[in-house]
Image 1 (cartoon, rainbow, N blue to C red):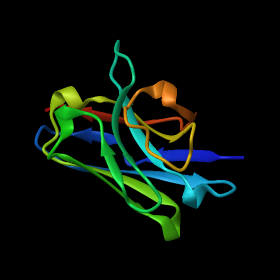
Image 2 (image 1 turned 30 degrees about the vertical axis):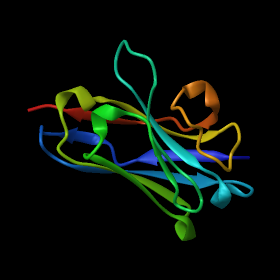
Image 3 (image 1 turned 60 degrees about the horizontal axis):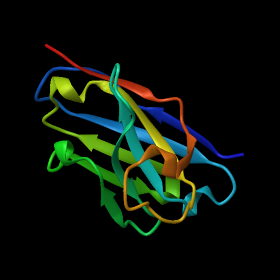
Amino acid sequence: QLQLVESGGGLVQPGGSLRLSCAVSGFNSDYYAIGWFRQAPGKEHEGVSCITRGGGVSNYADSVKGRFTISRDSAKSLVFLQMSSLKPEDTALYYCAVPKDPYYCPPTGHPNEYLNWGQGTQVTVSS
C-alpha cells in the first residue's frame, strides 16, 4: 500500500526558510513522480511543483518561482521542498501526492490529476 508522510512544517518569520520532506513507501514507490501541493484556509488546493524519478521538474505555481525548489533522494525514498524568502501568503497546509499516472508529472498542477495523498504538514509564516 502506497504511503506518503510529510514533515518539516512549522512557524517561521517572513523571509525565513523551511525544508519540507515527503517520505514515500510502497511497491515501486521509488519510481513514482511526486508532487507538492498546498491549501490555504478557505482556498482550493494549489499545485506547487512535481518531480519525476529521473529528476525532471514541473513547476506549477508562478508565485513560488525562484523561492521554492523541489528535489529528491531516491535512495532514501524522500522528496523535498526547499522554501526560502517565505511570505505570509505561503501559509498553508502542504501535501505531497502521487499522480494518477505515477511515472510522469502532469503538465498542470490540478489536484484531480493526483491520486494518493499524504496527511499534510502545516506551514505558518508570521512575525
